[in-house]
Amino acid sequence: MSRKLKDVLRGVLTPTELQCLVQSYDVVGDIAIIIIPPELIEKEHFIAAAILSLHKNIKVVAKRDGIYGGEFRTLPLRIIGGEQRKETVHTEDGVRLMLNPETVYFSVRSGTERKRIASLVQAKEEVLVLFSGIGPYPLIIGRANPSCRVVGIEKNPEAHRYALKNLGSNRRITNVRLYQGDVDSVLPALDRKFDRIVMPLPTSAEVFLSVALAALRRQGWLHFYDLQQEGRFEDTVAKIEAACRRDVLQLLSAEIAVCGHCGPRTYRICVDAQIGRISDPPHLKEGQENFKDNQKDNIPLDPQ
Ligand SMILES: C[S@@+](CC[C@H](N)C(=O)[O-])C[C@H]1O[C@@H](n2cnc3c(N)ncnc32)[C@H](O)[C@@H]1O
Image 1 (cartoon, rainbow, N blue to C red):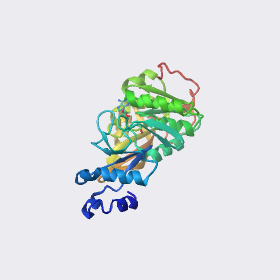
Image 2 (cartoon, rainbow, N blue to C red):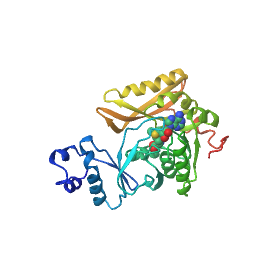
Image 3 (cartoon, helix red, strand yellow):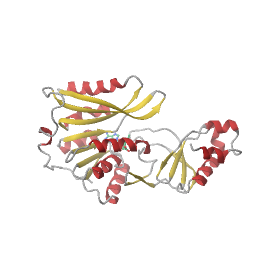
Image 4 (tube, helix red, strand yellow):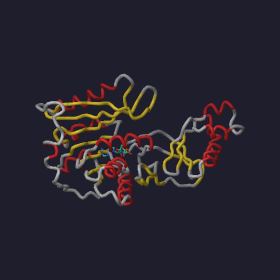
């Protein structure tokens, strides 16, 4: 929270209420999303008015009306100030993303992480983003790496609808294809291998490890997200190791990136893992076998 918000609210909120004010809020496009603690519910309209008066670019103030939940990881929202709408356009790294933050998952806080992944991608790679939502990972990776081909798979039909819209409105990005459906069925049907697979579903990506590993080229990279407690990050590496063992593969290297804080001593982490066959020596020079069929484009499904 900016100090100014507290200043505007001084005199409107009591000193005790000011202490309850939540320290920060997210801005998605022109919508501010805030947490109102129970003690401040009676004063929420004043808080919304203060935010609107401080930021001319914010047109809607919504409060979290629950927690992220369900298969589609959506967040109930209630408008408490400004215009009566929940659809907006957010810009991240030059990519325009239209969305309704209540009906689809999107976190502005993952912007730095998306940029980090995009920076790891090498020329001409084939990249798969599982759980692609409204398309931020595929579009940011695709924009930063025009020689690559990027595929996204998302189950929430509403998120996929926005992802297609977003692909259409970022006209210069022509190397992204998006599929709607369950990763478990869509990915095997693609019958295609990838150099890099991104798995941004920290709550349950483990369930999809086997289907993802089957689509990863030898010496390929897996970016596996997890929610993990401080001091237990190696447990996430162990999950990948166990999946590799089951599928007669080998974890060649694993590095952990901490990319978010999501509760007391709990973090959103990403394991950047390189995976080979049991016989592969660690750190075999990339760019040999794993790129050999980069030229083929055998997508059997209609990406729409
Ligand atoms: C944490 S969100 C990440 C969305 C997006 N990658 C982003 O960063 O904004 C996880 C996404 O996975 C989708 N999802 C959940 N289960 C799925 C499945 N079995 N197949 C495909 N997508 C799934 C959800 O609908 C949700 O959009």
